[in-house]
Length: 113
Length: 114
Image 1 (cartoon, each protein chain N blue to C red):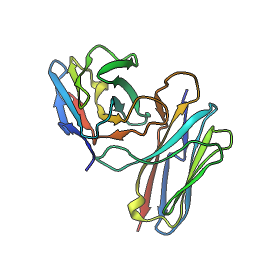
Image 2: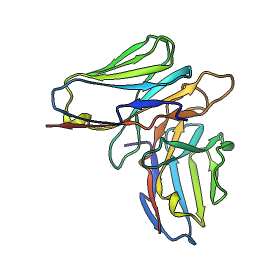
Image 3: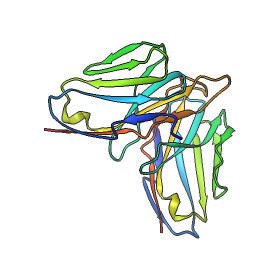
Image 4: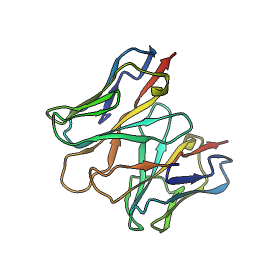
């Protein structure tokens, strides 16, 4: 059973379009992180969201943490070819003690010029 | 510049070979991790070290053997691997072990088992 479900798995859009990708769970998380991984490289952290309902912006990227801290979304405005990559959400389940960071399978985004 | 360096970047080995993957972090972090990334699967945590002590081993087969000689270096020793072990192996570090810690990844070693 997948703890973090990401959708869609694949997304191919034209430059300039907007898109939203989702990260959902039935579990509550202390925090959620979003990473972007480009071919031949390791994942790079984009943002961490901690508070339910929190919204963070990183240039054209908007991240939201659900009120119940079970889900998150990433919205990209006016996508550019440089946004192409694998977007991974990851989170720490809210239980006592140290828990490992768990990852979703990712959304593979392709932005076509 | 990643701050976490992994070598080699690519490795092809037979099932009877013994090899080691190396990871070095220049960030002054206290925790280091090994992950396995396979196609169609989420990143799988293999090992966690905090202050050079192994604190977590996620039921990884004994053909994978980690070593952390100091807080800057992490190794993954490989022996008698199987074809299903072919994957991208990622090393990461974080300031400390614990929730909300951001992970800094290396670019991985692409491992192919013949």
